Length: 231
Image (cartoon, rainbow, N blue to C red; front, top):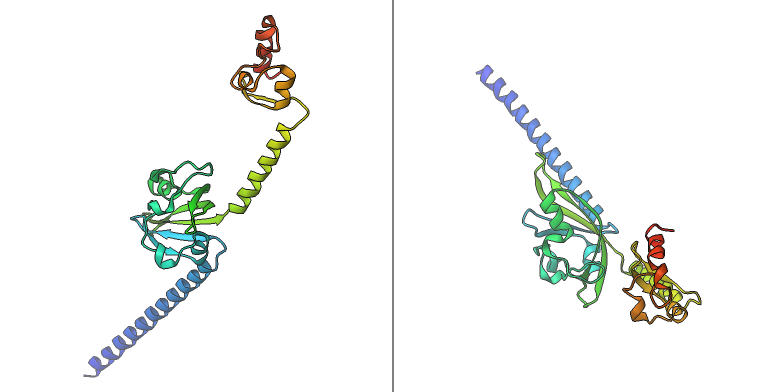
């Protein structure tokens, strides 16, 4: 009887210790998950997590703010939902298989600084720079994708404005300016060039430097060879 009682006491002590250890691990895990959730929620970048089916399972506050949506509106949607209306920075539509998340799902490899535009709920275009990477389980299998992005709309506007100013400066320059490819094919000519050369803009663009309207035909091939050689 004494042996049975002692054995029972030992088993009880071991079980109790095991339960305490398990509870401590569960508490530590919950605290770790809560800490991670707070970090993601206060992150300055938009963060979106997709499951194996490509559906959104988590979205932080910044992502909702940038896209102008409520969390309830976005969780459960797929990465290729037409509502996103994704385009490249030039306005051309991005096919479903070409989006950052689709590329990670297809290759299992991360992508970085993919710039594109999405539709805001107010109808405007939001320009984003996105990084995306696979989520792996303990065995190394992909169980989802995590994407983070920043709003570069204002930066894009500033860049476009700088390009516009530069184009105006070139167009209104008192100097003749011509841009060609390596074969001498003219891709751009400003107004001063056409006035100095006597060529019309239609004759200049798409033509080959030097133009017939300004150079004796006997010298054309020699000058074009010089252009091709970079001289």
